[in-house]
Image (cartoon, rainbow, N blue to C red; front, side, top):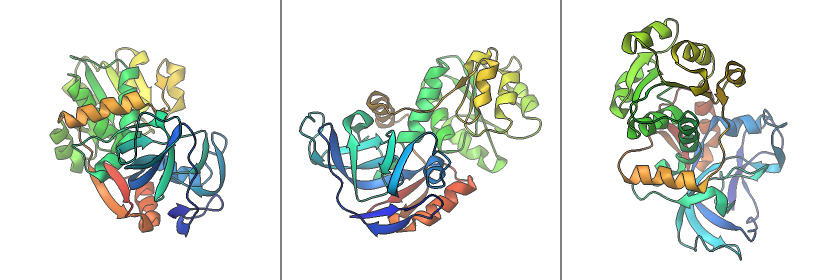
Length: 305
């Protein structure tokens, strides 16, 4: 099979021929249609997560997948060959990632593909969608809340906006001015990030916000702490120091149940995935470059023929 691989940290992934992966008793083999590109993917190839995850080479990066079940393990009853699935295929051991034609995945990380999403959209949903969903749950966002989403036009932020709106919350989202119309289309009230952010948010919400989410790092946590009524409802995926102030640092976890909930929101017309770039697997280096720039509105996705 074809796969994007590296043989050492610091290499740029390139397309190589690899043996077909084996399938464990609680896993399935998926023929990949699309694989979402996330910043964690290139950070792994650079060795930045080496203390946190175990890696073996040749290493195939990628944790997001949308595809068709090709084989099932002997104990699998949840899926059958031909089923269309999505997954956040993060495991403690990193080697058989999703930038490949065939990917093994345990059933605990999978859910059925939302019928309303294209393959590219479905491939871009799992990690970003789960991060948004679990962040909002951690802050107990519900009807009547006013929430601040930092980096609201990004892959995670754009999904967080839609999920919060679906829960009945009022959403204020930060972005560059060029993306304000996009945020309005998602249901958010846009504000420009940077110096003076606190004052701009207070102009919209004089009493502050009920919950705030940091999906970018930098000054997002300090600004959020100034605006939120209780620090316990500040959630960050980028700044560990949030916990020192009573907030919550969140590292997303695989969850079939949460993925299913995201799929239900999508099929109900309440959630969509904006794909900024759709590239063939062979252009993985370009996908990494685009991800490293950090300017994408929505998701970057590799399509596997």
